Image (tube, helix red, strand yellow):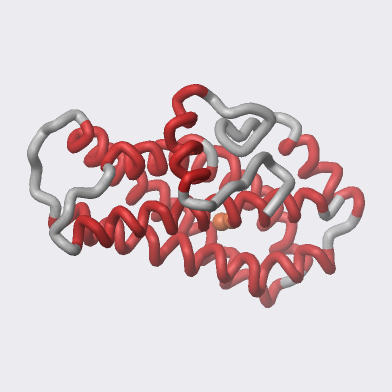
Length: 190
Ligand SMILES: [Fe+2]
Ligand SMILES: [Fe+2]
């Protein structure tokens, strides 16, 4: 049942590509240019609709089981769960701001730039900690029964962009990713 970990890993690859695309637009803004705010807004919309509400809660189900199996991981697990809340909070503020900007409302961008940088740094270091230290221990210590419990949760999930089909609201963003040469083409590749 470690295919659930593989799914979480694929989610990280998808998120990393979107963060790179977001970062590219942020660098345009920081260089005094005019970024594509629609791309940035759609990325944050996706982050708020899949990672924040599906990927992170699924991880927390796994992490909770893991705390009983490996006490040494407790600190990192506590940190990761706290970061999930932080990612959710910053993401919400960024999405609200991007919706305002994309609607053509002029607004100060200094906080937005700082918030965006913080978000990118937090998401990247968060995924590094999961991939580098926590997932390998889960892979080692989880039993078939543990995975069956988690699998029940996974069956209820739906990814609106990299899942079975792309929702219309993400078609533009997906096309942008393809044109960046970041083709993903589905849920089990890369
Ligand atoms: Fe996480
Ligand atoms: Fe994750």
